[in-house]
Amino acid sequence: MLAIIIPFYKLAYFEEIIQSLANQSDQRFKVYIGDDASPECPKKIIEKYQDKFDVNYYRFNENLGSKSLAKQWQRCIDLSKSEKWIMILGDDDVLGSNVVAEFYKTIPIIDKEEIKVVRYSSQLINDKNENISTAYTHPRIEKSTTFLIKKVRSQTRSSLSEYIFNKEKVLQVGFKDYPLGWYSDDMAVLEFSDFNTIYTINEAIVFVRFSLLSISGDLTVSREKNKAKFLFYYSLLSGNFFSKDQVQILFPKLFQTYLSDKKQVMYFLRITWLCIKSSEILGYIGFLKSILHTFSKRTKESFNVK
Image 1 (tube, rainbow, N blue to C red):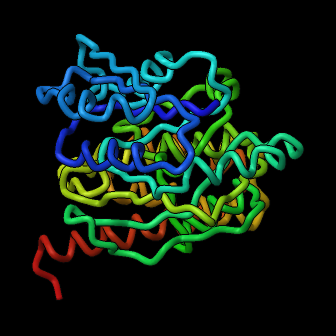
Image 2: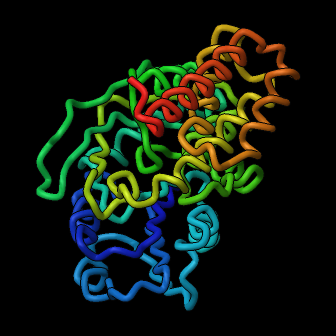
């Protein structure tokens, strides 16, 4: 059985996601809604649709998402029962009507191949439910490390809502607790798949909302996002998960975290140590040149040198 878990906080688009659940052509799922002590109450909407599907609502007394989004996800997962598979759905995203049906069609393949991570095609929508991207599709079978490199190169995209995870694996590994939950979903895809295989269902779409109410659209938390980015890439490059060519693609992303926030001396020290450990000398030299170039540029500007 599939558990669809909704960590709730915003009411703005909540009815649209609930409506999309009611519209599922296959109703073999249970919904668990974990209210993160929101100032907005979703009960009226839930009651409106409670005879459409099996839904369980729980309100937490403490707002946890503002401190740790990963921990909020985890306590919402803990609301679920014996379901083998879980989908963690954002409270502003929308499912195509055949998402659940297509999942059950693939169960024989998923079981045979021992797949732990299932992914859907996705499409971005705005606050008016208008499509703002084409549908993103993926290879039927793809290594999660290959996917990550493609995402780093802006050749694809993903977010938490478009995945179904094996619950046992999720409980075993857990979500990395990065600031704002930024990159926590990417690391989950890698770790929950054992840095191995993702199975994609391209026949159904998850619509992912991009708005000023979402973290993705929030421009006021760039420093916290940068910290999460550093922790993510530092963790990836500290292991042996990627080929030499892939590592050379990832290191510049780590370098950029320091260049974006030079007040973080610890970033510089840890990057230096990691480059020495990984024998990434040429990349490190380029990193130092970027720092010197920026320093020289700022010095000239401060003295009005042309």
